[in-house]
Image 1 (cartoon, rainbow, N blue to C red):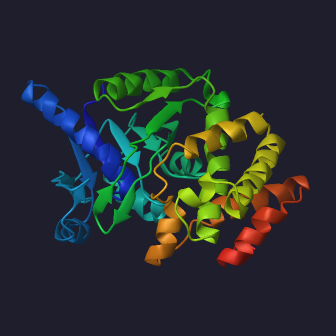
Image 2: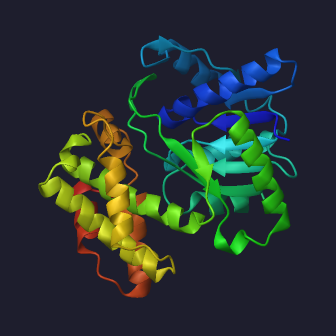
Length: 312
C-alpha cells in the first residue's frame, strides 16, 4: 500500500494537486496511519518558495518539504516539473527511488515516461495525464476556477506486465483514498496522445496570439490556428498507430471551452513571464514525427518559426 509520497515540482500543477495530497496525508496521520507527503526541493528552492508568500486562491499555504540529500526511498514519486527541468528532477530524485517505487509523470508531451524508465530501471512507471486546469500563477501565488482531473493507466504494450498491473492497483487505491479528482482509463494510449494533441493546439495558439483561453474559445483566427495545429498532431498520432480522429479533436476543444476565459495555458504564462517555452515538446515533436513518416505539417512549422524556437 502506498503511504509515502514525494512530489518534485512545486509550480502550478504541483500546488494544485499537492494541496489535496498533503491534506490526505494529514488526515491519515491524525487517524494514526503512517502517511507522508512532501515536495522535494533544495534549501534555496524552499527559501524562494516561502519568500514568495505562496497562496492558492488567496489562501496562504504551508507545504512540507524535504531536501534531495535527506530523502530515502518512498512508495510513490510524482513529477510535476516543466520538461526543461526533468533532467535535474531525475538527479534530485535518486535518493527517493528504490526497487518497486512507483513513478508518475504529469509532464506535457509524450516522452517523459521513457526518460524515467531509462533513468530508474528498478522503478515502475505508470502513464498519466492532467487536464482541465485553468490555474494562473504569479510567482508562487496561484488562482484557479477549475482544478482539473488526472487520468492514469497502462499503455498497450504494458497491459500484460504483472508488476505494472500490481503497481497500478496500488496507485488506484491511493488515488481514491486521497480523493483526487480523475479516473483510471483502459485506453491510456488514446488519452495520452489526445492530451498531446490538445497542447499542440491550445498552448501554441494562445502563445502565438498572446491571449488567454478566451481568445481560442470564440470563432476567429486563434481558434482556427488551434484546430489546425491539433489536426496535424492528430495525423502524426495516427502515423504512430494511435487512432485519434475529428471527434477526439472536438471533445478536447469542448474541454477548453469550459475553462475560465481569463485564465491562460502554461505556454502563454511562460511567454508573459519570460520563461523558456515548451516549443520543442509540442511543435518540435510534431515536426520530428512528421519527418519520420513523410507528413507535411505547415501549421506547426509556422508556429515554431513564429515563437522562435529551435524546433524549426
